[in-house]
Length: 264
Length: 241
Image (cartoon, rainbow over all chains, first blue to last red; front, top):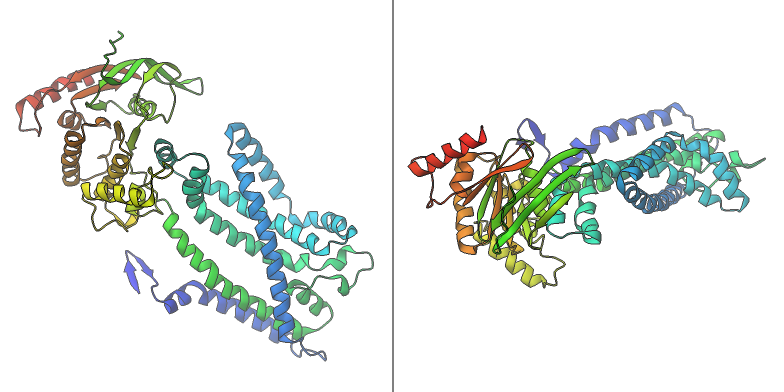
């Protein structure tokens, strides 16, 4: 442990584990465990096998990954466009403000209806996840761009770093902390929405559980509605554990890495 | 009154004005000539227009009217360093060298040369946040010198530094100026500093270049030297008039 000013900075792997995620993970895990216990006895249906639940988690993860990738590809040019002059900034920021304030799930019946007509059921879920993730990334990027000190932009100009070189050598590193924070929030939002996004039967006339997408969201909803409490308990424990591990091994490391890119 | 533009002038302001957004007047009808190899110090109260003069020379902003002649290769040392926090000392020094057709080995050797010149040996791999204020200032100067500019602009580079570090950097700047023969234009908030360093002092106030003083004194200049104090008093009288 290093004492820096009044702050105690965790140094070793276990210190960081303890200070960063253990308390939160323990709380969430306890909550999930209590939920599982409260559902005991698990009923007559035995829980689904662990590989099936792990596969469902992986399917949801991949869905979120694709949605995140698309959100990133759309967000960056959208933000760049909003920075092209005073009028563009005023117009786009007002537009973003209005659109992002509409709850994403309000779009879902319409989106699902359109995609389901053409048989693209996976695309319907990914599209809604994309919409949910997009605004976190957009607003984080806008905040990041606005936080770049004027001196930095002037220095780039004076030293002839312009155009693509400016975007690659100054803008991209400068917005890295915001991009990571925005991505973290986007994924958190994605995990929230996935519970609904994979349960497609709601949007299909006379739809059943068979119409749902294979994923951790649908496993949770389907198991609880079918009274398969054992499956529900295992799935929720798996979800909390996996997200905690992702947080520790991916997000915490990325947040630490982003410190290097922060302006003082 | 318009000044004659002399042929060896490297920078010339000829009736230059600058207005932001068609309403905020920052500089009105500026006339001034800075000879090649001069060390020009711009002094003046806050909001008087001195930063505008520097920004116009740097090409950060364009004049609304008038003619401004300046060389193409200009580099600048910023008040707070304006170093890229994610780049090491060596990478910051070589910031302006990329995209100019130089090999990576050449870029590294130039950066090493100026790192050594500014006394930054051993700090090459450090990030700006790991440096002291004086060291950051030196990195800023090394970055500006590395691109081999015709004119070196300094925007209050000593304003946030302690007196000891400031004194060390004064010596560094004078040494670089004498060795390289580059034209230096520095904005300062201190008349004493301007007279201690400059060969000419431009008083910029009320959004105009009010007066230009030629300083012809040997270095080093400090408060124990009578002619230095006389110049300081002389400029102060004009400054507060």
